[in-house]
Length: 358
Image 1 (tube, one colour):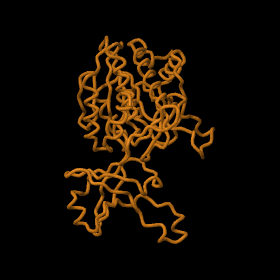
Image 2 (image 1 turned 180 degrees about the horizontal axis):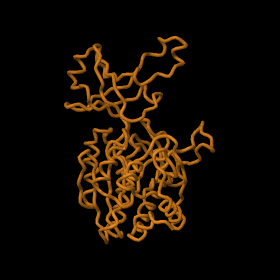
Image 3 (image 1 turned 30 degrees about the horizontal axis):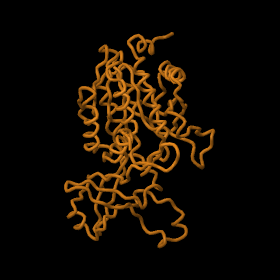
Image 4 (image 1 turned 135 degrees about the vertical axis):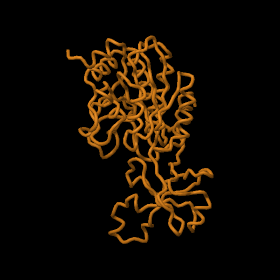
């Protein structure tokens, strides 16, 4: 593995479901500390201030470090763990997948289960099983067994999946938590590439609790007080069976994506146009996408105070919000180039122009 693959492996295999980001935050701190002054807000988002040639404008790159997961809701008398989801999980992705309950005694291995389909009627088998009807099985036969293992209500439950290099000609990776450890890796790599050669003060922010309502973006924006912001995250794709080209045309391997719209944010139009022109100038492949469900950290940041010009750059990723997502290395590399090039253009005059009538 090269250095980038080692970084992606480290970040994706770390635990850090929404609200329980301790482990991934420690890793992000390790990667931030050589780059600048590191602080955190009181919700748990981590902030790295990388000085440039001037103190203003204040440029914020945001990438959420939390992943989707679960939390122990209750333990049944016969030793099964009922859970609540932290983030959006399509229920059909869940049964049979390994998980680990993070307890004060360490991690406890388990699997997500449901009532066996071969004991159900034909009508029952045709119904989609909801997550509320599922459970985590750690092999126990009583509540006392589960409690003896250290499990208690409120403990986080994390997906278990390793970082995998897939056997296709182009570098392609599979892992859990690419949403949004890939954005964290792009942010770190871009800040390394930039050094302190940028006409602004740069703030890299690994935000907390995005998957439960862009909460860390809200609090960290107050800590950073940005003049302009770039959110980096995964983006939807249409290159899998069952998706019509007119619904989503983006593909993995075809370049990072500029998000033109999500239900909670329309990007600043001048900043958006600058990204398009810059990608063309730098010969960076760029896809254009919209997302009609959900939202990004940018949705909170662009509403801070009287408004912050914000854009979202996404890395096309298959199977997000599942135990294993897939993406291409070329898209990562091009996203790093695009973000770094954009930061070098964000001087005071340019940023002021984003909110002036032309």
